[in-house]
Image 1 (cartoon, rainbow, N blue to C red):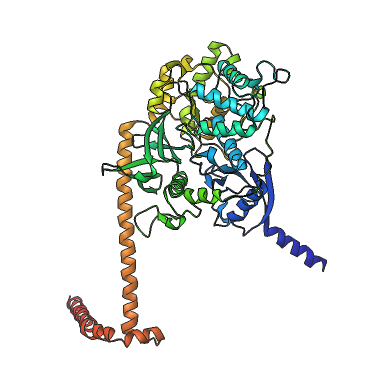
Image 2 (tube, rainbow, N blue to C red):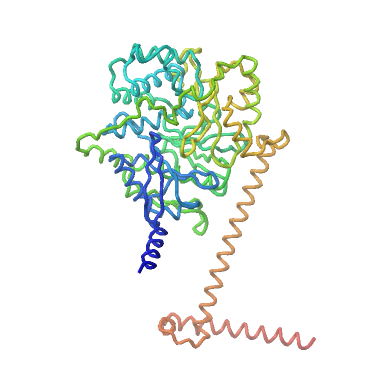
Length: 566
């Protein structure tokens, strides 16, 4: 009896596994689920834990052993999606950014979106002018520490938190001034709502960049927003396509295609190259899901899409959730008492750590700072080409990434902008980023080639994970890359034609075998007997097959006679 009990307990343990999900406030939720549990079960557990009803905007992200990010598919088994062994570690993130986050029905949803955008701001994915950055950071301070109190908040208190990948003491003072004078009396809910209203006006709101290269070999970052498809190069937006202009998304290997129909009835195809086939497939699936979520009117309009035009080739994928319009309609029907929100308060999170945990570059002598930046830049290119889909941060001090009309109206001295070329890691756990003073200290040639400095920690990661290239092996040489791209396109076309021929020959061979079985064999199977008795088959047999067989037999006898006579 004891052995049966022990063996039964072991079997139960084998059917269960532990799963840890890191939430947006950097707390962790751990649970034990069945091995055959689907993603929807885990997602519902987390939403129940958070008391979250407007859950369609969120998703669960994980990273495979090859450092490639994925969104957990809710309709599939969790164990079958994971390439690693349990226990599994994942994270909850905003998957579809609300078009108007301040208009979300429930405060708990707005708070979670606030945490995500605060994370985007810290990791440099949300680009803004210095004046906007100061206001956003001041709203974060007001939401987390409340009104300014001279007894609790000594001089320099805003430097206890780092809101951006890079900022200066001047910006810290501006953040403190706004917090002291303009935001007094605002509740955390009001500050968070104002923060969301300001953030959604920025052009990089909702951007989660995917690193790629264009056909000339130049680095580019593709992203999907609530309003369309975006291509970034440096800190400039080179393409913005509304969702109703994007007709099709395809990928093959590492090549990603975007098919566009403009209002002038002109058709355009944009082509980009991802670091790996897995990264390209992830990019394609993200695009398919975002297009379905934001573009369609009803989830019943969602169709299964294929990555290739050929039926026997490529990946097939279907978005399984509700679309944005349905989510907003469903949210309007929510009627309950607002759930209690436990805010993080003064505790620094991994996404907004205290600056006291590491030195700031502003305390380093000027000459030393320049040497640090130059050494960082030398390894920047190697990190950008890493295969794990995590490009580096960059800072550019040229044209601000804002709408053209606002850019012209802005003061030239207020155009310092911060953007990260980085897609964040699943845990978003990073060391504090050293802070430099104004980017004018950098050599112009370095800034034009690489964008701006990255953190020292990222430089170490790049050296450990990716070998640096010599000057002769630079992937960015336009002529060589263009020729390689053309050859690659021709090779893919030839392979597609060969696959089509092989499938056609295979089908013809199968049909020929079936015909021989029907006409020449004595198999007395019910369905074969029924086919033989049909008038159409009898006519085919006597009028076509029998003469063709006699002709082949005659030719074979003639060939045999020739061989014997020789």
